[in-house]
Length: 567
Image 1 (cartoon, helix red, strand yellow):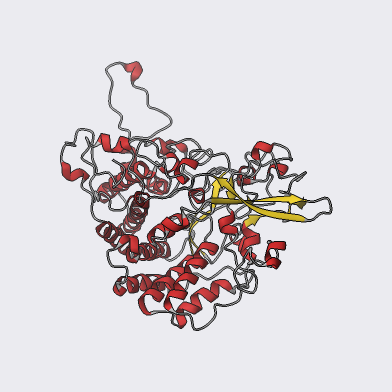
Image 2 (image 1 turned 30 degrees about the vertical axis):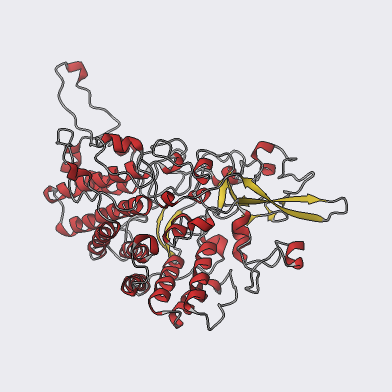
């Protein structure tokens, strides 16, 4: 079966506390709601309890346009504005509370699409703690309890991972479950641990989870639930963060990088995962029994997300443009021979979309790209996907459209109830190889294993880029690995965190948001001119971390410490 879809009554376990039913004096008020269950029912029925655990992979919808008819999972995933549209990968064509973040105007009172991590994560942590605090009294075999405990610790660690990478050091609540009648005046309730303490706690939870989780999803452990590989993959990511410049005072501490390399190697040594060989674009569509996928959120027709085809499609096809790739990213795709693209090269400038890294064509729709029943036309005048085309308010402001993740067998027009079936991949094996290569290079330099990891990604079937040149220095390899992450993991919610943890955001995020303007002469010749697609892109020191929403600070009676620069 696909990702476990439990009746929506379980989603009614909302707010900070579970719903508890109390008796009323008037008989006519003693009505048992049909859209929710009591905590007593959950704690007395092992099937209901396990369903409650499964639904901790999901979360409540807190703002408009989160998901589309379904509850968000970890992170954001497939929503209207992808997380990429807060980076140098794309802009969201119709804003939707993203432009002001790109322009450096993020504030505790105005967080846009970045405002839900704190509330959703702590709500989920409390829900996990509730289950962990009560599972001992449940009638269930100890072996199955141990599995659910491991699952809950994984989910809790994932929520802490989302908190840490967005806010830095966080409040570690342990196994505590607060109630409405608790004393909330104790400052210790709001004390934030350091970043390294926060990371260490999450890693410990993952070690405990990995020791008990199964190796794979099978008939008894359904697809979409945590496995040993998922726990180890999250641990590897967190330890990579822990060694990175933003997260530590000593980014040259080789022992931290070595721990990160070993954690990534632990995933590889499970011998469960390998790189997908069916083509880069198909990797994100063919996720059933895909050996590269370590952990994903699976969808079906009863559990749809935003219809990517219409949300991100070209206006000439009836699409809304959505997350439109920036020229900044386009220019970073290499030529097929492994050399860099340059507008200063006359051959490149005359035909900028020829002979590029195959991942470019699988990720980005450009002028002249074959798509569905014709070629994309972003040129002026007369291009069907330009301002001269239909619904010109949905014309890409950058001159590009998103192709990655989009299923061309699904309709653009009238997609409701049909499209929105792609699976969101949280962890895949290529990330593990990239994590290993980066950590190993920082720990010992560019040894043979570093080359092997990166070249495996570059030379696999469907990509087939040249292997890296031999003899690279550690610094040169560092830049190559960072570039490979940018291209391989584009639009997968990595770039935002990578440029921050490397502390290169003052460079990448202060670059203008560029697009392309293409004019077509009467003889058919195309002229390319770079343009600014979004004015005022800006990054400041405080933007390394998100602001904690003002309402959360106020709810703590100002005892919760705000991130620097946002007071």
